[in-house]
Length: 98
Image (cartoon, rainbow, N blue to C red; front, side, top):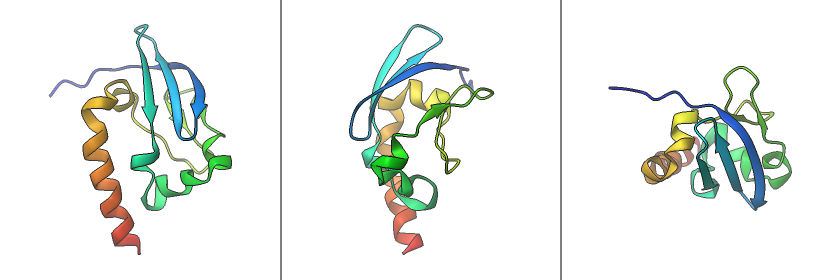
């Protein structure tokens, strides 16, 4: 399986849990993170104050948060292909943690 390597080069917060992400291949992706914000790692990002502290990791070149939450840049680049599966998994993590 071939895994494309992308780098996040910029982002803009455009709403609650909503980011416009720019990649090194000149693509942009508008991502609504709310459906995947469950579980131990991503659940805390439901706090909008924490969510708004998003930054670009200088080494991995992906989005990261102060609680060490992050997403693979390839997943972000192809969010529409992964979002439903991620949301389903994340909801299951929430039930396990409860």
